[in-house]
Every structure is written in structure tokens, then in C-alpha cells.
Amino acid sequence: MGKVLSSHVGMKINEWYRMIRQFSVPDAEILKAEVEAEIERMEEDQHLLIYYQLMCFRHQIMLDYIHPSKYQPFSVSNLVDKIENSNHELSDMLHYYHAFFRGMHEFSQKEYLEAVKYYRVAEKQLSMVFDDIEQAEFHFKVAEAYYIMKQTHVSMHHILKALEIYDQHDAYSIRIIQCLFVISGNYQDLKRKDRALPHLKKAKQLASQIDHPRIYSSALYNLGKCYGELGYLEEAQRYLTESADIACKEQLPTLPHTLYTLAKLLFRQNEQEAARRILEDGKLAAKKHEDQLFCHMFEYLDALYVQGMNEKQLQKTIDYLEKLSLYSYIEDISLEIATALEASQQYQKSNQYYQKLLWAQNQIQEGECLYEF
Picture 1 (cartoon, one colour):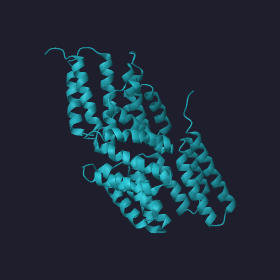
Picture 2: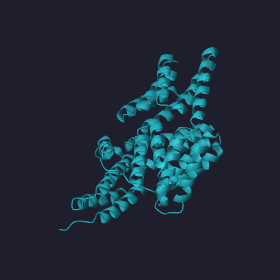
Picture 3: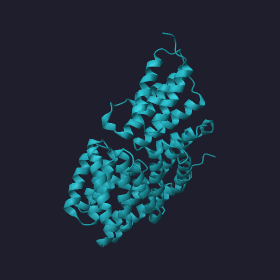
Picture 4: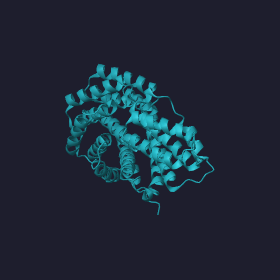
């Protein structure tokens, strides 16, 4: 058999990437296998091989999102080393893909500052990206990271750009749902929960129409969390429990976060027995999924609600969050601790945590200054 043109393989990788962005796992797997077979017979093209390696990276990120326990582990670190230690100079587009995909990986590892660092590198090459769906992908991922970091207005700017593009195309229902999650989350951070709820109801409706357990579980989670913040505790508990049941059944990595939110809701309702049971389930889930953040967050709940204000453990959690620059988490738990201390008339200690809350808010505001000039 003759040599396969690298341009032909490149076009097939482009199609493979289109299936990845649509979360179409069967089609993506078929195209990946076809690309790998053709690369064996392809004329030498080092740039094309790097493009293939980058797409393997992105393929695994998709699989990890869909159902991480179902697929063989993939050595991301080995692939990153191979790409970054390559002797071949990367084209502008390969620079973009490398930085963008690396940012996605760092985000999945909860390394949010590192993710933003790589996204900013990718942004420098964004003018070379002429595919509008790829533009939407970039704006979505950047919005998602800034939402986590409570850079609310920056996040909203990017997410509305992404949604505008996705709305013009078929086959991107998952991304549209995820955009609605980010929009509603930003509205909640802006203290406009009334504006968040309609977006979450729409997201749940759309999620119920597709066969995607993770996205439906996330829709239920976000709706439950919003109802809880609005004070509709019965609805909140129902949706969070349903979300957790799906996450447990499907072995989703979102389970620790869902159980954490449910346990906190139950503790606040003084349903101690149920809350402690969920707390223990959450500790096991966080350990199973190797989720270090929520291992610490469950220890925080234990210290606050079960051990009766174990200040040494509370400080340990704050130190961990500070190390990762997770100021939004510090803001939330500082308020909870301060409120609990105030309720028990420990005003001096309460004031210390209010000061910590103000410090965290200041760190978030300082983080909004991202200009290099």
C-alpha cells in the first residue's frame, strides 16, 4: 500500500476534533482509530504528529469528563513532556492547541491559576483561530475558570460570547447547558439568584432530553444549590439527593462536591443524623476519587459541625485553600465560621474570621487586575 498524504490525515484529525467537541464518543473513537491506522502509513510530517498527540490529549479530557472510570488511564504527563521537549518549532495553531488543552487539563486538576495562565498564552494566538466553534470553546473554558475564581464580570463577558456562537449551531446542546450553568452561577455570585433560577430550569429541561448522566446530575445539583440559597430547603434537598444518587451510580467525580453541598444543607437544617451519614459517605467518595480539595472540605465540615469548632482543623483547611489561591472557598467558610462563633457569643474570635473574609474578598478583587502592560 502507498503512502498516505499528511494533508488527508490532517483533515481526518479535524473531523475527529469536531466529534470530540460534540462529546460524540463513539464517532470520536472510530475516527481516532482510523487516524492511528493511517499515521502508520503516512509520509513523514512532524507537525502533523504533534497535532495528533495534542488531539489524543484532548480526546482523553473528553473521556475523563464523560465517564473517567470507564476508560483506561492515559499518561497526560508523558504526552506533555513529549510535546514540550520536541525539537520541532510549533506553528501558531499548535501553540494555541497546546496552551489551550494544557489549560483544560490544569482546570480538571483544580489548578485554576495554572489553567488561567495557559489560557492567557492561548489567547495570544486566538486571532489565528477562524473556526467559530473553536472560538466558542475558548470563551467557554475561560469563563468557566473565571467563574470558579469569582471573577464574575470577566466570566460573564466570555460566557455570553460562547453561548451566542453555540446557539447558532446544532449538535452542541451539552455546551449550551454548561453555558447556562456558568451564567446562573455568575448571577448567584452577583446576588441575583432570582435571575439564576430560570437558566437552571432551562438547563434541566435540556439535560433531560439527552442521554448524558453527568450533565443531568450537574443540572440537578445546580438547581438544588440555587434552591438552597433561595431558602427552598425541601426542593434543594430533593434535587441534591437525586443528583448524588446519579453520581454514585455512574461513579462520577462530581460526587464528593454534591455530597459536600448536601451535607452542609442538612447540618444547617439541624438534621444531624442524616448530615453525619452524608458527611461520612462524602469522605469515602473524596478519597475514592482522589479529590484532595473535598477531602479537606469534608474535614472542615467535621471540624465545624461534628467536633464543635475544632479551630486547629479549621485553620488547616484555610491554609490549604490559601496555598491553592482558592479565595472564594475561604470567603464562604470564613463567613460560616464567623456566623457560628457569633451565635455562641464568641465575638472576638468571630471578628477574626470576618477579617479573614474581608481579606479573601480583597484577594478576589486584586485578581481582577490581569493586565500585563
